Image 1 (tube, one colour):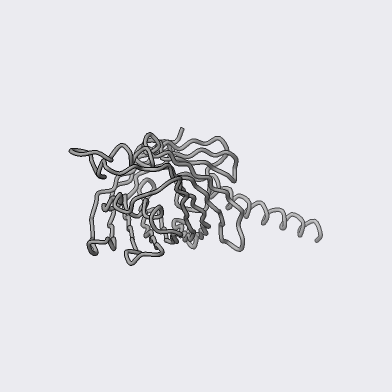
Image 2 (cartoon, one colour):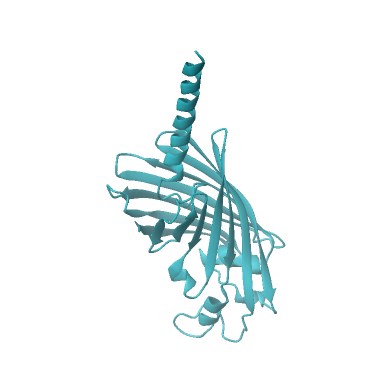
Length: 258
């Protein structure tokens, strides 16, 4: 009897471990609490690229964006607590080279060249909780805060009042920033899935304090999980100084597993 109980206990433990490993070693989990396995590389073309430092820690960066806006994130997976997968993410963002580049007249000019752009960085900290209620469904929620350090004077007239840009730069003018959102992803058939998320940005010390982005896309994953492409839409809402605006943009994401 004792031997039977021992074998049963080990079997249940191993099944639970394997279920966790199947998530920990799955791919395409950028918006979840799950990290890439150790030494695994996911190369994004229009999105972030990621590298597994260990089985519970990954580093990521948007490489194309880093040419003018250096950025880096670290995600740490803390474990499974009663079915909830928990991680924290911490990031740095340095937009000054980009802002100086677009501070010009004519085509490509988004900021008047009369303004000097100081060096500045933003620091992000957030917690991500994921839950797998069904075999082919993963739900995630996150919340966090962001603050900025500006090494000099930043004129308020240097804002870029465009979707995508404004909510990612507003923290340098109005801080701290509070972010929260949800993500849901699932599988339709063996190679086809879907991804849905809503990101919310809240800013302090301003009446233009709320921005939202909603993505919905269909995802194709190759048979050996070495390639992923996602296409859909990005719906943006912003409470700008000149009024409330909606924008509908195309969404395309391409990534390779190295």
